[in-house]
Amino acid sequence: IAGVSKSTVSKVLNDHPTIPAETKARVSDVIRKLNYTPNANAKNLAMQRSGSIALIIDVNRLDLFGDIFFTNIILGIEKHALSNDLDLTIFNVNQVESTADFMKTFVSGKKSDGMIVPVSLLDGNILDILNKNSFPFVVLGDPRSDARVSWIDFDNRRGAADALTHLHSNGYRKIAYIGGPDDSPLSLCRFDG
Image 1 (cartoon, one colour):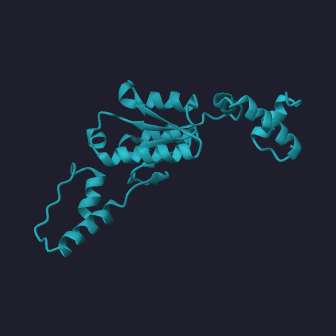
Image 2: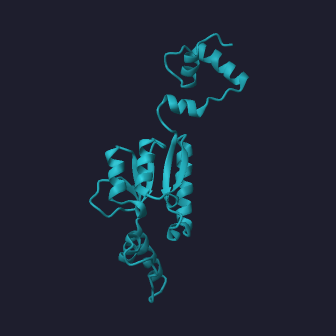
């Protein structure tokens, strides 16, 4: 209809600089008239990417899923993914027999372009699988190890200190801390604060 090749249409859709403005206008007009929408799967296949990021979870971790903050974290991840034209895929490792086997299959199958792994699910095997395959990932929470990983977390120590300062400045002197298990890095950070 526009009198151009499929590759020219593709270049127009991707705003390629070698296409003349007149051709871009003509093709864009036909695209609008036909109400054409590119197939995201075909585009991702051509670009050798999945168009998604994965969040690995374990729904049996009630300390996470009973926590409204974790839900807000998921919503924030999703919002950021969508703003970058990515889908968020959530995988529950509780449903698999072996988390390490799941990760091997997931990574080798390139089911996502990157992965977010809560620190509670990170162990040496998973870290080895991700690193050996140069698979992009970020750890949600401070891994508290010498492992060279990218991670993101709240400043739990500072948050607890700020809360304590606020309570103290308002006259409270008998302040209790109710935290998680004694071996929880999160609880330890908050207690230190």
